[in-house]
Length: 76
Image (tube, rainbow, N blue to C red):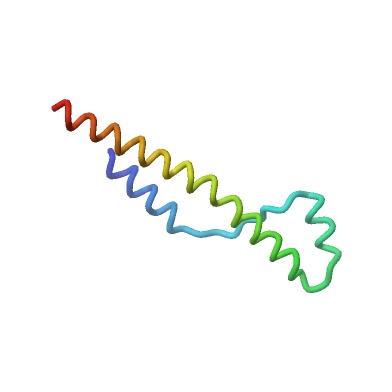
C-alpha cells in the first residue's frame, strides 16, 4: 500500500500542466494589453510564489515523519 502511494506522489510531481493563477480583476486588466507578455509574467510570478508555502509544509512534514520514525526504532 505504501508503494502505491509513493508511486502516485512521484508521478503527480512529474506531471506538469498549465495553471492560470490570475484573479478575475488582474485578468481583465491584463487582457486589454497587446502581446500578453505582462499577463504571462504576472501569472508565472503568482505560481512561483504559490510554491513556497507547499515546500515549507513538506519540509515540516518530513521532519515530523523522520522524528516519529526515529522514536519508533528506539522503542523496539
